[in-house]
Length: 475
Image (cartoon, rainbow, N blue to C red; front, side, top):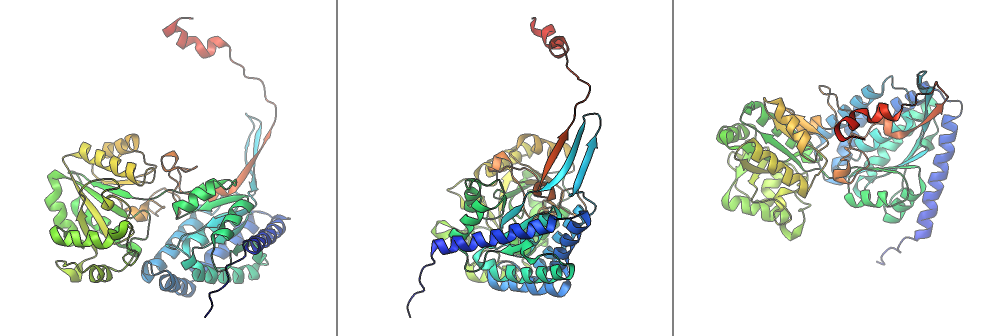
């Protein structure tokens, strides 16, 4: 049988151009005569498209079947929780018309759409991430075109069908939310990047770099490689329980899953006992070497182990695990940090790396070295009763978030018991090469026009500004 002919790049570019033209027409119709209620209803339509229980289950099942990543039960939870949290965050938020009036400064701030958003979304979250991006986009009056990963196309197509069904009930134009059609290609994605008004890119760092060089304003997020510290003041049972819950959620597909645990020496043994009780299985010697070889052989992560159930990880690596029937994830010792020690990087699997520190200062230094290798700007965690230590991490390490006494992957992207915005995309600031250091949220999807009027002048004299300085240095 003959191989299929290669795609014609010009035809692929023309296809994307047509999608963008349709998106611009839909966006213009959407904002014509609009009000806040129209934007809000469209956002809720997308929310219900993913959260309706039967649809959610169908899409979660399809996502696992087609990507081979994660597990159905946790994807159902993620689709529900992330969307519900986002809808809570944006409820009542003003994204249409006047945002604020400041008579003292003579400034009126007015919300305006970006236009057409392009969103490149990962295979790890092929339903939740596009839905959340689309909600943020239409909440601010934009159209959006989704670019799913090759394995995520089927799940994204199904989501899109349900979004359009909800839009039909409201009279919202279907072309307000579109996706690049199969098959996925770099030509299509590149053309999309060059043709829209705003890019949002989650996942591949290659895609993030391409987005930043596309000439289009881009919001990219950095790589995760979460390190969590357990110090001598921590509640060890709770720390172990939370680490286990976070590490195993959706088989560690989250960029916020714990990739390394740094334990202060004084509580190492009791913590390891607590971790074992929580399902962590510490491998040493030959078994640890076997796991490392299986996971990192060939110079890259073994795709057959990524985001797989623990029984498959054990079976495919052939390691012998104590109390295997209650194992939830595997732990290996970190022999070093850097490119010669791949266990110090992101693993996207039910494997985490263990480091033993002399004291808190040593633990902080280890966490800093790990971040400097992979994950700068993303987040670190600490289990402690000493809040000054959390502040120290926030003051000294290259990180945008310090998660304190929480299950990391549930907390970093927003939680119902912390104040972070719900998001599946975490900006990593200049440390991670990103334009934002916040959780991606609706405020990033709108322009703000300032109407500026004259006010009584306020011009200080040089003495007002430099008086104290001159007292120190002289004039």
